[in-house]
Length: 458
Image 1 (cartoon, rainbow, N blue to C red):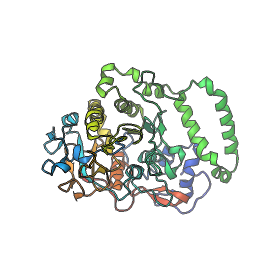
Image 2 (spheres, rainbow, N blue to C red):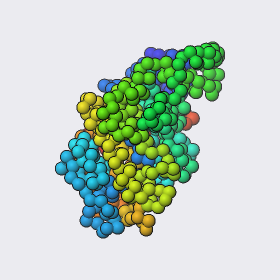
Image 3 (cartoon, rainbow, N blue to C red):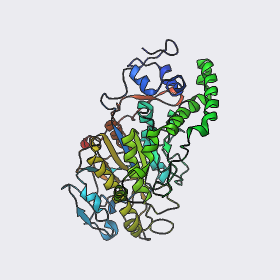
Image 4 (spheres, rainbow, N blue to C red):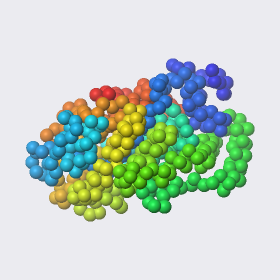
């Protein structure tokens, strides 16, 4: 038994003490990674045999219209069904919009959930928070992103960070709420590594991956500071702000900056040009390719933001009038870029034998209004929308749930954000009935009571 601070009290059912849990985030300086901790504590929070499981979350920032993409209503009135027609796919169960023809060619790999909904406000960042953490932001509790939870429970498995966001974390959403793409109450040590660059640009390089000699003295200063902290009492160490930020973050940054493996993983020039072009020579397409390279190199969780904000670029946010996107803009710009990048990613993962161990989930903050608005677009609608999953044990070619005749509310098998996050955790081999050390050290359920994986997917 690993005992770092003497006999603890208030043991959990697997023998871990409350004090043990509280110290996990601050003991990186002493050489204890969380993976070591969980191994020493009999792997009580994860399923055996799940070490090779990974996830790519594609977050469709701006929110696609379910009625114009994956849940079409061709028999509804014109103001509901919109301008596009449905097409058949390689799955007899699935019809989708004509604006996503490449999705149709790979429909045997993914399954749609047409009955997702939530009760949060119809503002972007409220939905971002709920769909990426499984929880609404209430009471000042900033819940961790699903990737941060995986980082906390399993740690890194290579020189690369366990959790990466491409190309960068989300910008403003209009509601002045956390966007859900952080470590939350698990601490900044589990924030994602954000690329902060556009990998489709000719001069693309990974920021801050500097040669070791340029930071040698900085490293020595930080190491001396770190040693002084470790030499203090455990109690003082626990209450020092640097204990949570300096220890694991600096060591992780050092490993990243000095690792040939990390540099190679981010180097898209190593890919044949025809592969890069197959994904699309745009930001989203190259992020999809980069996500495959990162998972291949050992990253556990990659989140791709299709867009960065709803204010300064064309997105899925099709209100119809400027500065927002029109339905025609979605058809001509957004959908082709997205269709190409996603289909190339799924095909590439399948051809490389990676899809069985890599879940690719496509989420959004909400859907769009059943009726087209006077500007020819659709507005925010959390009451019903479509999400979908591929790989990681998911059986493709299925449709789970259904919406009513106008795509306005779930009519069968309602699904909420907590169920979507539970589905990701299930694929990754996390035990859904386990707990995290939450705010003020209180046990915090991995998944809120009542939420389970969408079992029909598996």
